[in-house]
Image (cartoon, rainbow, N blue to C red; front, side):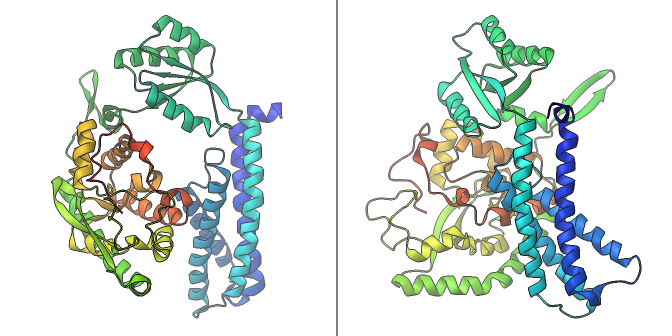
Length: 458
């Protein structure tokens, strides 16, 4: 094992290649045994195999399946399984084109089952080997606000195989010389929301000592990180345009929104019809739920959702949905779990109120309250609110406003057409993940003053 540790990256790369090879061999076996009519007599078979590998690696990369050791084991298995399903679907269409007719489905399904078994076994072995090669680093956390610091420490400590935070120190009450002595005793440093001058000194010291550093970013860090590097004579300069999307990007984004939302409405219309009938039959109440939300430039619009709560959900005053909320109907639990309650928002996208990808639209009251605590919160309004987005994918219902803001700004600062496509593909991944449909956790917003009579009910 000691010899392997010297070549850890090579070992992990080899494991990933073997996993891809095993899954590809599963497809080849299914192809050779069940789809003989689609085999070529010469080199055409290599093109089909190459396309399978290319498509599978692309989906696996998009879904983060290769983040072995970084993602949790069940997330790795889930990501690989999704990649297998989508790749085999594409290959089914490819083989049907070769055969000039729809080929039999059952053999492909059997092949998928075999491949998913390989995914389970391969992911478990790869994960085990990763943590044998990469032991958790001993870390020290440096913070100025204890609440923020402890929240991050708790999140990182849940992934004990990767992070081992053994010490926390308050930069406001500890001398910089003592902090440096602490840093010398650990392998990595976590920096949370400290004075910029102290942060600069600690960064320089960690760089000199070769210590790995994790930083909880401020708004300026996100903007500067995505700035342009230019050279003025013999001086390097960072330039940030700070203008949001260009006219060209906005036009392309709108065209894509119209096309995708129209296709989405057509494809999902049977599901929406079933949802509408089920909601009406359960209690006879209204099918749709409408609520004022804020989008680009502070514009107010009515967001559309399928009603998932009882008709008199506000009889005790308006409140946000929480885990195991008794106000959620039987139908509501189902449509919330698979995000079907969001489907009517495709009409919001088609009408131009929303975009397919962008920051989640917030209630007027929430924007007002969050902006008092975080003045930068209104920066999210530089683009249209979105049906899906960076914060919707990586956040939860109980993610703090500050973290949502940072994720939304990362999206705005790194916008591209390809990124929008990637985020829409990634949306499929979270549809059946429990974390993405959790109820609201009031503790996530306990540092934000909110009005008890002006909170979101759904």
